[in-house]
Length: 190
Image 1: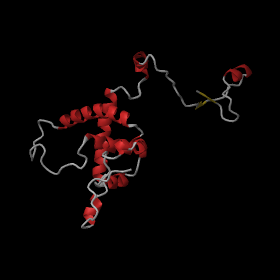
Image 2: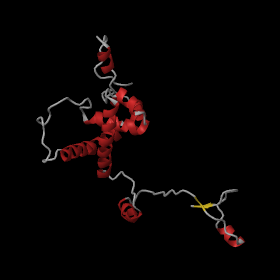
Image 3: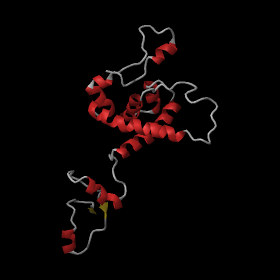
Image 4: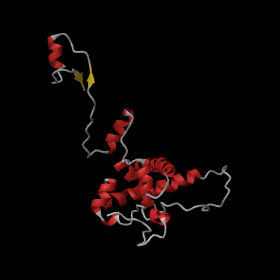
């Protein structure tokens, strides 16, 4: 079900056997059940999200390359990233948000250190938020903009769910009947 990149039948030492345990997008893309389990998305949904995610990744990467930053090496120099493809990056961040494992477990599965997994989580969370913002899949956080969002989504049914707040029970019988929440002990309003 998992794709363990770089596995060989015989590992020559402990370091080689550790490198066999890297989760990648190579096999879960052909296993709908595994992809749904890891990310919460089907292959079509994953591919649909991949396009804005790749655009957001390139936008985010170019924003990090500031002209005032003096490089010690040429662009592309240094150690190569283990999450080479954009698909692996998207799998990494969706796996984190769906399963929510400890960073140490995530680091083990994707063959990196816990600190580097933490950095990737923060970096890719920003990229995923940009990608979801481009596709207008983020929930609206400000009630002032709710009318604009509802105008864009005419054919979509909207449910607004609120939490019940505890309030003081009215003393008059008529007001008690109109404000009755149906609960026996705690009195509250939505």
